[in-house]
Length: 121
Image 1: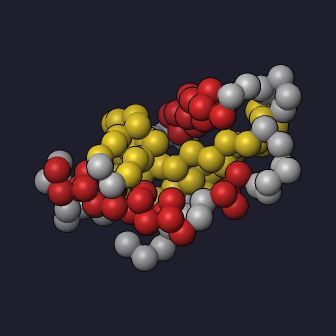
Image 2: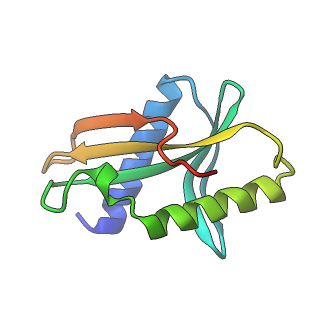
């Protein structure tokens, strides 16, 4: 499966997973010039920016380990852009990561939610 298709499959799996955990999905694939947020949701009083990391093998490490400093910077910039654009700059928010490992036949081998995964807001 191509990388883009793997990412889309992972995002679909993550959305269903988050819904079952009580997240209200607001937007998918929010883009601005500076970056992208895979999923924007509400959970309780928090606005949650969710980064989905999907892997089909551990050859390059665990999915959550692929979130490098540059990706975090783009994610935080996009999150701040969304907050300003939607006039929610004063709301409580956080960044969560959904890490997904798939088997060769694209079944979920592991899915993990990491709340408050990114510090430094």
